[in-house]
Length: 533
Picture 1 (cartoon, rainbow, N blue to C red):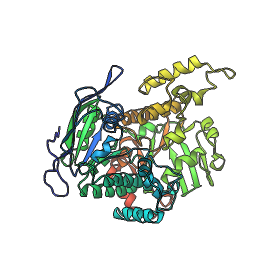
Picture 2: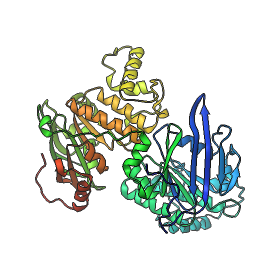
Picture 3: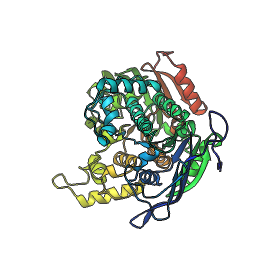
Picture 4: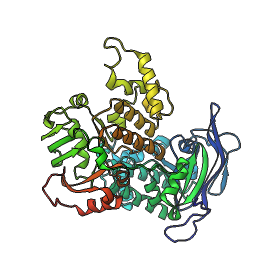
């Protein structure tokens, strides 16, 4: 393993400064089960330090201990800015050490303005007889300008784009660190907990520019993510947790992606062979013809039984709209689909008609469009199957629970508790629930949009395996994704979109992530009007 003992300062090429945070012998037990087992973490001043691990590895527990939300087991030790700190931390004590947090859900209030969101923590902890809103807006404008963020301080947060909300949450956290400069200890530690899973690449680049500006000022950043590529791009070093234990700290510039992933999952990567197209030419092809809708101007394709077809392109090219137009979740203006029972117009498509015809969709927005978070796993999984074999007049709850338990075992949902609300599951396990929900129907066409977004690398392997198994059973798969490596791994063909049309097709030896990227960035305009089929 590429185990590192010192970090490299990417700006100077030399060793990093003294430690900003040192955790050692950190343990936490819940009901007899150890979530953290003698874990250690050393974050240096002026570095971005990654914290990785599968869901359940202990990352969240570690962060909650730093926030004072959990008390660790006796014997755990913490040093901040060279000062030994007693554990557990009192709630809010992290502010004394200039620590600030940005969680995945950001903690912003959409109905309030930008300036009000930036002020809210101060207003909650300090007494103010009056507020000069003009002065506060001017200060916020200056702060945003420091990080090259063009946002009007007066607008409501609900009107901001997702990346602007993420940037605003980071700026608010930085402001909290700045406000404790005179009374606090250390140079500041910003903890970013999964800030990027629903952001496109160009927006991630904007966020990373702000992160680099923060560490350039001497502060440290702990960057928690499932995305190994992002961790390798932004961090100096990264610590990996598995089953509550630290399995290693890697020096990012000298480590390979495979070293990261193998350390995270504890085994070598599985290879997913695409096989040959000759194996997938038997039976009736699924045909989509002259699809028009949204940004898509003219899309036609034939999918062979068992084929995994990828769709990709730059943001705004239209590739990611195709699954929703085909499914009927977005209205199509024209086009037809034939899944072997005759051609039907896509302008009349609806989710219910699509499901009846054997077409199912796994959307990218899992929390809001793929599951009902408040309902238990059993209700989510069996929802598409209530007519079979469950009674029309009286639900067979015992049968529903038994089926869900079997599917949870097959799809490796952890914990396998059908009565548990989906909201209690990790992102990866929730995605397994979505796959179980739809693949039990043995669909003719499986539509996927960013199927591994916000999913850890272990669960990602499970998703890939079940997609491959569905294809082997004869299901045709249409996968829209911005993850070029994923497309190379699981697809038989990939179609590249630009300006609502297919401009290139890659297959066989041409299908590599580098070739996909090249075609996406070269294809600023359609080069042919011919349909791809």
